[in-house]
Image (cartoon, rainbow, N blue to C red):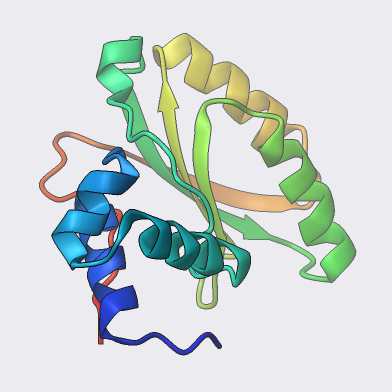
Length: 154
């Protein structure tokens, strides 16, 4: 695990709010020279603290207004079965998140479809056609009350 000092934590706090800041603005915000700030951000990336920097896109603006959370239950739970399912999930552009979980279900998916037809076709490909999927439950999102990408800084 990477050791983070107070400056690293300030850099992360600023980037979590706006990762689009130019390096000079970030450096000013955390009290470093631009070159020192650039080196620190590069180190945070190299050590995996910063996985990647992405744009947070509004699914509705891309005509993906049907959001859902799907729980999936597998019959068999071995690594080869999970890997096979994950391979198929990774080819589905409508699925934005996939978590293997403990408890009553095996997997939780978050997806953003254009409409019910796209969702139905995806369900047929991923769930109905997979003999290892025992059951799945879809929860359609009515409204998003909180969507955070940042993590608490302990």
